[in-house]
Length: 459
Image (cartoon, rainbow, N blue to C red; front, side):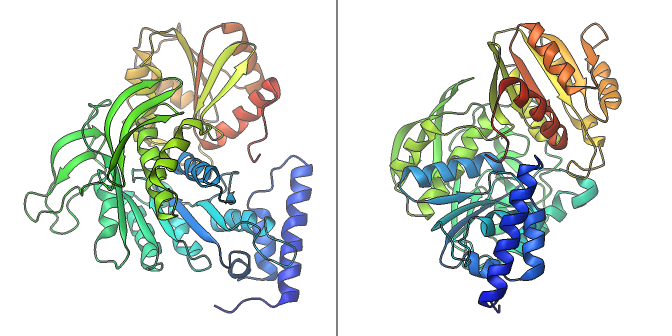
């Protein structure tokens, strides 16, 4: 691919930096627009601003942001200077904005390493300009079906990206049969991560996304389930099955609101690992992060050690202090992720307030039918749930679904103003779990940040 000349490079970089500066000064964040502007001046500018960098790209349905955060923390803990696209703008132009803005005025990268969160459909675009050392795929679930057209189409989008990047090491979830199938018929080296043993069923078993064997189209059999369609899958006809993980969680010893303690095997050695984030899905994210870090030449022990001091990403188990009240935000955007969040919030022996927010904007997907496939009954029928607030553009629809799940008018209340909602939470005087989808999370987080003086989401 032809690189832009020096004049084109300088103009492109300057346009990106200036546009981002103006947008952030006006409180708009400046996510994708600076990248759009920069690539208007030099379409191939990323070939310059990423030259010589070692890059990890993380894609998949759930867990991208947290896994990126864990990998970046591991690399920096090992003394490697690393860029992370913290804003969460994970389409091509959003990623470009971070990579270009962080370069020098001459387009030279300031960081030798980068960890990039990438939308599933954008991977095939990104790898035309960026050559990843590793591509991590977290998992695949039904999500934004009006945009992706179903989980099999999402898998095809990612496979196209993988096929365009044959030199990248694939870091794949051994228990997830869809993303695991990316290892078939490609020359890429594969590093596997997963759980060596079941941790018990987390909610109802749901194999609707699992599909059939990609080799012979037979139905899977399972030796055990973790949650949804993750577990010890195998095809009884052709032998396609879960692979033995290179990085394996051999036991989960403790999960609490403050984090988890597990034993993890990597590089032939099993050691205790403290993960400073709770929930089973973050155990998977941690294993993925260790595997990716090892690909980037971080010693296994150092990568595992870094998990104890990792911080939550914005909106992903992010915790706020609202006048002494613990408020925790968990992004939910599809049935699998939502059900896991419900397993987490109902797992503590304490009364709590929950807030569910639902928008149907472009960033969320316009089809909200997924709420009919979500186990709201688990949340609404928990005896520790004392108050339930419902907000967002589709609050009325969500409220009706919650009534079917057992949340009557005595339990739930629709609130249309996020600032008012924050004040209600302040008066409630009990722990709060916020469960918004993406665009509603951004609005709610803005109101909560003003009340608690938290950092902007891109910081």
